Image (cartoon, rainbow, N blue to C red; front, side, top):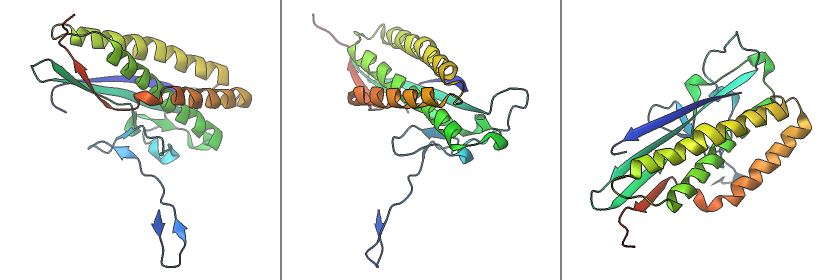
Length: 203
């Protein structure tokens, strides 16, 4: 299950041993300053210890991931706009029922996070292709973000939960794993978190 959050900020924002053995260090999560948000990273996979909120006893689901899209604008006043955009897993708002924890369910929750990253890349692509100027950049950017994050993203997440029955339909879970993996590859040219947009046009 998934909880959707949107953030907006306008402003500035293998170890080799002596025995010739190679020890692969476990990837660490990329955290914000509060240590409560994990930024998406292809090398880090969620663990049950990342689900740190108290479980919601009234809900008939085994886990809930809270995922946000923090973004910000910075304009230099001369016609160049910088945008910073991420997706993050919010540890202190995400929870799981301990007696329901298993690897399949954890992969299901990880894929919610991966789908969020996929739509972040879609947003980056649309922002780079959009025509903005000094007067309309905020309106245009927020329209794109609303279309992809608040509409299309939510629709896909709901479809994912429905088709996999919250991870219980294994074949569908495998199909979704493959689909999202390929889509992330398809959008590999839009992985950057900082983009620069020219607001001055001479045509």
